[in-house]
Amino acid sequence: MDYLHQEIPSQKVSQARIAGIYLFGAHRALDPDFINKLSLETIKNAFRTKARCFHPDLHGGRPPETVEKNRQWFIKVKESYEILKDFVACQTFEPEAAVVRQKRIIAVGGAKGGIGKSTFAANLGVFLAAQGRRTVMVDLDLGGANLHLYLGKTSVKKTINDYFSRAVSSLGELIMPTKFGPHLIGGDSSQLGSANVSFSAKMKLLKSLRELDADYVIIDLGSNTSFNMLDFFLAGDSHLVVTTCEPASYLEAYNFIKVGLLRRLNRLFGEESADPGQKNFGLQSLIHEATMSPNGSKANNIPALLERVKAGYPDYLPLLRETLAAYQPYLVVNQVIDVQDVPPIIRRIQDVARKVLAIKVRYLGTLPFMETVKRSTLNLVPEVARNSRGPLAQRMAAMSKEL
Ligand SMILES: Nc1ncnc2c1ncn2[C@@H]1O[C@H](COP(=O)(O)OP(=O)(O)O)[C@@H](O)[C@H]1O
Ligand SMILES: [Mg+2]
Image 1: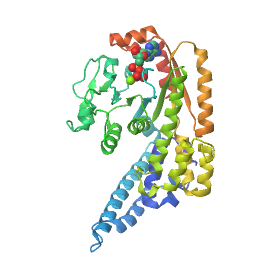
Image 2: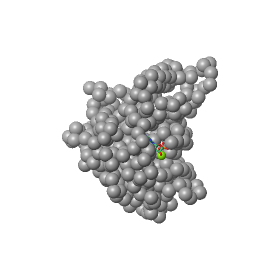
Image 3: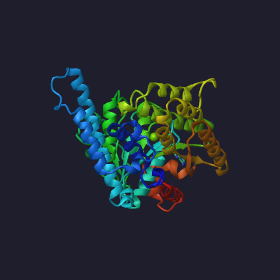
């Protein structure tokens, strides 16, 4: 059976495949049928073999650098073993229930400010909470945190900054209830340097988001394309990009989608790859050319990149294809005055994304421009809470169904 058509989130498949590279080597892990052939027995055997090679206690008398290198490999091998064990357990026991129970992280981004990302995120959260889903909203607009205002709170005592500064030991300690249903982990951008987060703190946060006690985690993002912002965006299971009908906004939306893809590819194969065995600088420079090259002299789009990878690095082709297939951002068009403006914008972005980036962009829905929404920001009452059967609530119902 083709693993892409099983009901396993593709992010999990990619993670398992990367872990597989450590235990089984790239050749076997990149075999399209690798995932289907996995069993607890094969994983255990592969782990035993690798552990014999790298376990720090098994090879005395080696130079310290070799011992340290082996120790690092052993940590990776052990982590990979745990990932694959969990993966196989999920497949074996009630796979459908496992998928349904899984927490969904919804990232709401878009590179332009003032287009309604936080308004949309807050109202989606209120809607999901009203459906009985435990929903935690996280303000990751580190430079302009204001999600609390959209959920009726004028200030937040403990914020995400307390997590970064280790004033609290777990992310869960920051969760607070709001009057309107969803729970909140608030932000605070009033301190100088609030937006600066180290790589390790960011990685810890991304892991902790997965461990939050929630059915839905909604991440509200800032209006820039910094690496941190893109990594937060990519941490979602669903990637929502908000835009309006203005050209400045939808061009930024496309750009955001594009740099998100570039970041994902670089995190997979480049300098910051989670997997040293996966780093490939030749491939990385091809990716760079494919997405950044200002002229057409080299591979300046992803279909051309695929051709070059096929010729130069064929082992990497399945993982690259899989990564492209898994990245399907959703567009949300907000503050719409005339619905007729929407289809050409969606079509244009979808066409360019398909041709240039070889990815599928999905359309999630449209929200009208509403005076009541504008006012709700002033009254600190989200529109969906004020009018739980109104037009905005109906749009949220349709969109959450799609998600
Ligand atoms: N659908 C809408 N209709 C009317 N006003 C809106 C709508 N969506 C957002 N707004 C207004 O736009 C402003 C910016 O919204 P905000 O959510 O803070 O944007 P962002 O998070 O993208 O910076 C707010 O005053 C908000 O009330
Ligand atoms: Mg905002």
